[in-house]
Length: 280
Image (cartoon, rainbow, N blue to C red; front, top):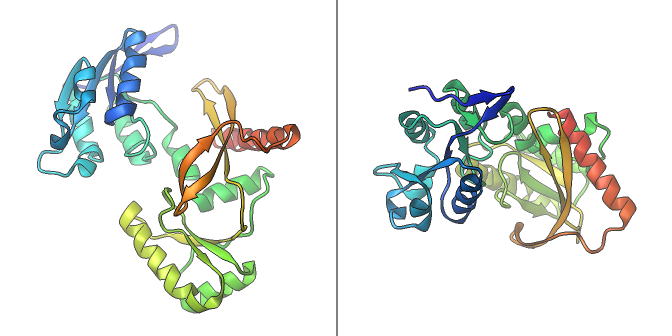
């Protein structure tokens, strides 16, 4: 059965929502959906059969038979099967797992299911750090000096680092969570570190693309979140400071960033909106 959402006055009305996630984030979405009169559907891996999110939804279905919990929630085929079997109008991916997967968003579109999140084009542009940098440059947003994706050729890797100037940071083009990141102080361990970062990126994200960026010592990590809708409206939700980290993985986030003055805050938020508008 192909699921379709009911259109009311040109808007999409969601009546049956599947949350392609688990635990706390799924429960939050169920609660919000219930307040809107939307029927909720959970999925759960075998290892989560007693998890609270299974019992907080109106209906719940197992996925990933014979798979580990991580692979179960990453199974696009399984999630689409559950959605089709239950005439689901829309899928909310939560965060993590498939929330930034353009392939998942495309699979939903093929079945007439609303994907609650960015378009595949937006995810491909902003999910790849090299592509996102190129977009920022085209919008006039300042960026740090960086290389193109690195080849396997040692001489080309060394030349790229020399052009930027040490110290540099190796970064995986795809994914996050600090995976594939390595600070490099000199040429001595550059090539080996790049190859190691490639292997880690391939294992974590399925893609081994990495690049070099100028390393700023003792930098603040500040993010601006933005929110857009299908009618072209776009707003920013101000900034958050993510500087407290372990192994380049954020531990504590603070909002607002206590050290920003008003003009810097406005400039950062304006830059975020430029990028958001450019990538729709």
